Image (cartoon, rainbow, N blue to C red; front, side, top):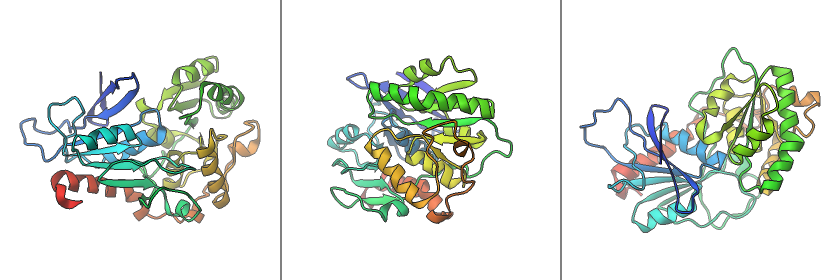
Length: 327
């Protein structure tokens, strides 16, 4: 069990019965009177090896400050659980009688898994919904979950490389690192001075592979504020994920895609590139990789209301925690 202080809240991380890491946030405002009665308890669970799940949990949690949040080993049962791309946790909690708000966070090229939950949501923005997709049943689609801060630093430097290797096997990750990631990181340092590489899976192997590259820092996605890193970075390279798109879209910032890992990322990259002008960094030496379109997001018609989706989901969770019959 690991206890961390994250964004003004205490976070517990524990391992599941088979040793897998399960991120469980215990969110209680540090300014709260410990003797005051709780207005409601919400459990937050995500798949920490999946970038989009960690992102969704964080961004929704930022709007749940009115609630106390428990974790599975706590003596009390939560009033509601928000589960992000962790179907086994959703099944377990639903079996215990806990109302579950479930969010499918990542883009999938295939059918979504059936998950027992009171409310089922899927992060599928309007521009993505307009394209053909397959699903077992109609779900409540939500827009991209934008970061709370919608601006970047005035003074920016370096490069952020955001990598998602979820569901890729060791051989695929190793080939990706050798063929694309290491050359891109080295070129980023040469052009921008330094490079932060954030990865959701295979952290130890990536850190070892990039260790010889001076000027590169490697971070585990579950442990770092990559929203802040993006705001401070001059350039941005990322795996085709909804997290990467949401950062660049919400802040109207340039984005260069890393080559996709797996069919889901490939499908998202193909769909996105039909709509907006985005380069793929298959060869980091190409100048176009480092001079992307300065603001390619106009075709997606971004607006302020669409950037409030995390707040709307948090409102659903609060209502269910305080008035269980609301759903």
